[in-house]
Every structure is written in C-alpha cells, then in structure tokens.
Length: 446
Image (cartoon, rainbow, N blue to C red; front, top):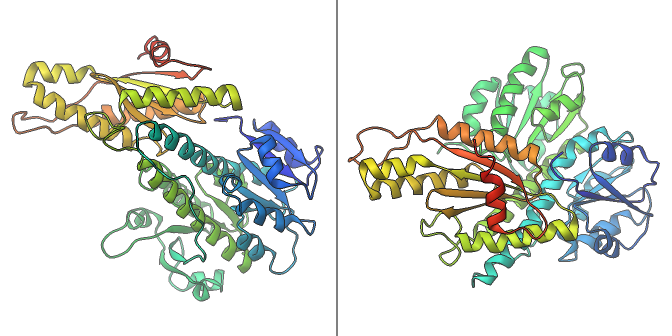
C-alpha cells in the first residue's frame, strides 16, 4: 500500500463489508450518513477519494453538487450501490462519477480499482501544490480544469478477438460512438498499441477466452503498464468464466475494469466512456503540471527543476505530512560517471551526458513526481503519496534502465557511454529540510 489515503464513504455504515476490505488494504475510512452535505464532508475529512451510495434519491444530486464545486471536484468520486434500475449507469456517468461499482458488497473489486482513483486524486493534489510553488517563482499555472460538456468517444484496439467476433460478444460496440479495430494476436497488439502514422488508439478491450490466451494477454497488459509512454492506457478486460482464477489476478496484471461474459451492453458502454474520460482528465492534469517547468523554475539544464524549486516544493510536501498525515518519498541519484567523462573527454561532453541523464530521469517517473538537480552530478525525485516500498520498486527500475543503456555524446567520444548510478531512498519527514533529506538518502547510497 503506497499511501494511507482517506476514503470518504457517504451512505454506508461502519459495519459495511467494503469498509472492512478498505481498512484491511491499508486505507483510512471515514463514513457519513446518506444525504449529508457532501461539500461539508469533503472539507471535514479531506479525502483522497469519495464513495457515494446512490441507493437513496439524493445520491446522484450529491455527485452533481461535488462536481459543480471547483474545490470538491478535485476529489475523485465513485458511485456505489447503484442497483439494477434501467439507465442508472448512464445517469451516474452523466452526473460526473469517475467510477461506478455495481455489486461489490465484499469490497474486493473496490480495493482492486481503488489505486487508479487515489492516483487521480494524487495528481489533482500535486497540481495544486506544484502550481503554488511555481507561483513563488513568478510562473502562473491554473488549477481548475473544466470538464468537457460532452464525451467524444475514442478508438479502441480489441485484443484477442477475431474479425467479426466482437460483434457477437457485445452487439453494442458497432453502434457505439467509440470506434474499434481488432487484433487476434496479443503480441502483435503490443506493437500496434504503440501507435504509428496509420493508426492510434485511446485504449484496449482485451478478450480472454481461455487459459492459453490468458498468458498472452497477461504479457500484453504487463508490457503496456511497464511502458512509460503507455502506462495510463485504459485496459478493459473481458474474460470467459474460468479463464482467470479470480478478478484480482486480472487487476494485478494491469486491467482497469474486468467483466465476465456475457457482458451487459450498458455496463460496457458506461465503463468504456468512464475509462476514456479518466484518461483525458489525467492527460489534462499532466499538461498543467508539466507547465510549471519554465525558465524561472528550471535548472540551467532546462529539462528538470532547479534546486531552489526543489527546496520550496519539499516544504509543501513535508508540510502535507504534518497537516494530512500523508506519506511521500524521495530518491537521490548520484552519477560518478559524469565526472569520469569530464576527465576523459572534457566539460562539454560531461554537460551533454548530464543533460541526457536529466531527461531520462524525468521520463522514467510519473508526471506528478518532481525531478531536480541538487548538485553537480546529483539529482533527486520527490514522489508524493508514495511509501518506501513503492518508491523502492521505482528506484530499482530506474537504476536498472540506466545501467543497461548507452548514452551517445558528440563525435569526440567514439563509443557509447555506460553510466554507473548510485541511489538512495528516504521517506519525507515533517518540516524536512533539503539538506536533511539528502543526508538521509546519502547514507543509503548503493
């Protein structure tokens, strides 16, 4: 569990099985009765995610009220207890819900999909923080992102389905405003999903017909999730009964939503649109966060933040730990190879390697992570809402990528440069200083 986010549940009792499941997964739950003032509840609990029961007549109104408020709309909202009344899924989607849970009394599905919701909330919170820090340097970036008045569909790749088969699987797709193309082979699908001049995709619908196909689709889902360019691509997985031992294992492989055949057309339509809308929201947030990197906030390299910005932003992250009991981490990277290149080939070559490494580091973390230079050959990545266990996985992945890569400099260097990176990890503390944070991480360099 990366961060003990608070989950606000409106309209569910403390003895609800979903509360117990979320508690067991490491989340902190806060409950309010049905019909409560949702704006006041969000202000009171400051949740990472809000779940709203719409079993009562006021449920949809609560979602609409939150989505109409510029502050409350930054909290991802999911509808629960929606029942089986016709049109309810579409109503939840139109009201602005970020996700919908149909029948999940034991909370397993809720826990499996909660990470995507908490990440969305984390991006919203980081935009507010990053914008505030940038403002101290004279860079103004707005934090309010208007929801589009209408959804415009998208283009999906249907993986594992023969031409014409998907129409039988779900008659809705040919009639939907979402376009689709089919690719029976998950291995070829992996190449196609990267996009080309001829085609591009906004997500994938993965059809798992049996255990043999499951192994191939596992590969597809994992490879998409591990690709920095594709990791937020929506993946809707449709499985025949028994192809997966349980839905949890499908979510572990990277699926956003899992459904068994036969798939209800309204369910598929609603969730595909929700997934595409969520991706659009994350992209919009990412663009705003990226806009805070400007000449006034950037290091002299130009592609990462300055040490002054890192110091100011660290103050906000460590302040959030004391006010919201949040958990954030920092990874320190030291690259002695840069000094060796300077000694062998000169300062110009070392500067070029330094700039390339900065770009790689920024590209290998999430958009909500802040990468800056804190020394000549020293870099740091601040990771909000991330515990040490998750940050350690990121550290190992980044170091592994860098150690396996060659960096090409000018023609004065006839060979590719293999870099050696030392790295250390620390959890941010209340009222942390940059020097103290670096000192703790330096003690753990490996």
